Length: 445
Image 1 (cartoon, rainbow, N blue to C red):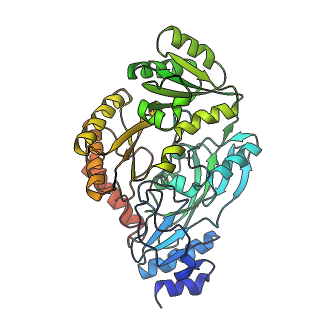
Image 2: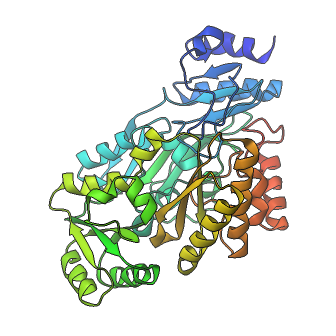
Image 3: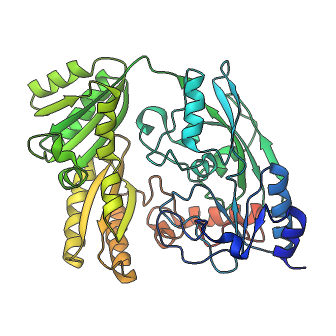
């Protein structure tokens, strides 16, 4: 009996989908749109026991398994190759418990992030993890990619909000450490090892996430800034005087492309969204205008108005109306980001005159996003964009991935940010936890 036949026999056709049952299900590719191949089966377990059974069978047959979350990733990490089995936890979803004393929630891996956020709000608590794909990304995928998002400057990445974890190893062994304690110094931290491992070391099934008190007030403004030096000056002022929860920068072309031109009379060289928990934003902006740090600002007078500011930043417009987009995200020394933008923009334009490049990001925590429109999306052109962008990252000592992960699309460039010894250590960890190499093969390492 081959692997798929045994999976069908053990789990049934509701869990193990094959052939025509895969029609209409988005399993070929994540949001990078680079995947081309259907899996030979899609596993949709609704319990940890079913995940364990599935992996036990696949391990015995040396059958490759590709874990898939909400398919919102941009690095090809959920893409299948011919002959792979895909495993989705979309049917294993829900918030199991909210503990207001420990300020923690127990959540299943298939739970959509926005569902978990709303459950926390109903308990008068804040789940501080937040990203633009909140309505479709899943908690398991957020952890597996150590997602960042909009409020890392205040609350950290997913890893920083992860108290406990349950996962199933490649051979079906369940690792369950659903701790609710902030202090846990009991040996190797498998929780942090699996966060960011992109499904290559184990399949995450449950998590305990840290919650925070609801902010008493949130103030949001979008600021018009003349130079990057002034952007840095505004960041220093905001860090010193506010409880800063977001500091998002948009270069002029991106801001204009995303509809920002309706906010100011003229598109500024830089537009900055400043969000703070608590009061003081108006006083800060008055001081910044008086000192020439900014030349205009709009303070949101309602949640709806703040949402309009964020809609510009979250890029729904270009993503919906532009084809052939290459999305990159990198981490850079904050002081060097604008120099990087200038060099990257010029080098891409010189090598590929038909392209257009747009820059924006979570500059307050060193994360820059790059969106390049590559007409025709030819492999050679995409490779040229990667080579230029990541080569410049290496020159300034940055990281080729800030929050999208490595997947397949950044695999060739990982050595730009990690030394040979680190790569060897990663390979040793992979071999120790997945000796048969069945979990998400060809990704990360």
